[in-house]
Image (cartoon, rainbow, N blue to C red; front, side, top):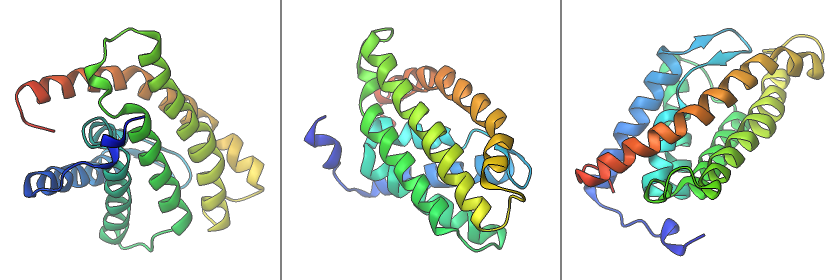
Length: 184
């Protein structure tokens, strides 16, 4: 872990890129995902992973929190603090493990560890257990908590596989964007 991941220089360019990533997350999450009251499958993680790779854990956290709050308000709903907290931790985990990972040699075991660990933590601990609890407490899931957990197992399995497959692709895209000086 390097200290530089916590010291990304603030600039107007950075602010504009973060705003674009927030907007993309809102669109992917709120408008381009498959949703039921308790299960949601989508690609809202894509802008967060890009942000985490380029700007680190602090900016990935801020991006996820701002996108969640703005997206919830745009939908006309009230934010659930627990879900927002889970997203903040997800952004931080992605940033902690993925920051500057696009600069590493692909295929190395350490690269795969840096991809798989945050995905498994985010999906199993935060999405499946914590977010299910927040949704269940808010009344979005009927029955018991464990019934709600079981009902979200398919979503968790699908999103885990999708993220593990797509994150290396996103790392390659970030590498190209860096070469063209479009990010970072």
